[in-house]
Amino acid sequence: MELEHARHNMIEQQIRPWDVLDQRVLDLLGKIKREDFVPAIYQSLAFVDMEIPLGHGEAMWSPKLEARALQSLAIQVADRVLEVGTGSGYLTALLASLAAEVVSVEIEPEFKVEAEKRLAAHGLDNIRLEQGDGAQGWQRGAPYDAIVLTGSTPVLSEAFREQLKIGGRLFAVVGEAPAMRARLITRVGDAAWRDEVLFETEIKSLRNAAQPERFVF
Image (cartoon, rainbow, N blue to C red; front, side, top):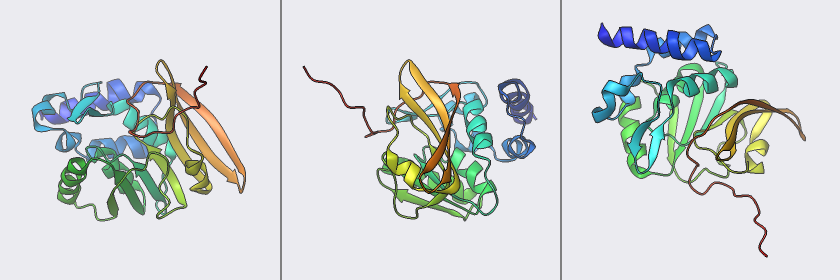
């Protein structure tokens, strides 16, 4: 009961106040057990409004960022989704519960192995975990209905725009500290995209993310 009370408080006190009102998302957060994806030593922090260390210098997003990204992407039941950075596998599980298929690319071998175990334990069989570096796009399986980058990128690789289907959505945190912005990019035509700034935040960069050109004097 304590866990369920903490989960309820997470949803009602952290997530709803951050403009997450999509009932599908709220219901899913109550169903997929976040504590199952948190490293054992941090399980008491599973519902706290903070990033949780995963090792290798990486961290789980805060619950409200996970929820806001999920709501922004508006995943539909027939969608194929690309996730860059599997991490703990929790956001992967949320995406897979809404979509037809999720391709999740992880650069850290240990994370991929652990996520496979967690996702299998939850009976999710519409996920393809792949080992590799997707920081500047992932052509295999493209185009996608939705793409989410779980690390920031100083500049957004054009590959991600091109790997969206028409009507596809991309959630990415773009920029460098202290000026990072969560953006939702929607492909509206063969060579047309709509770019919306959602909010400001700060998260760790993807390894090997695209970098801005630097002037050398």
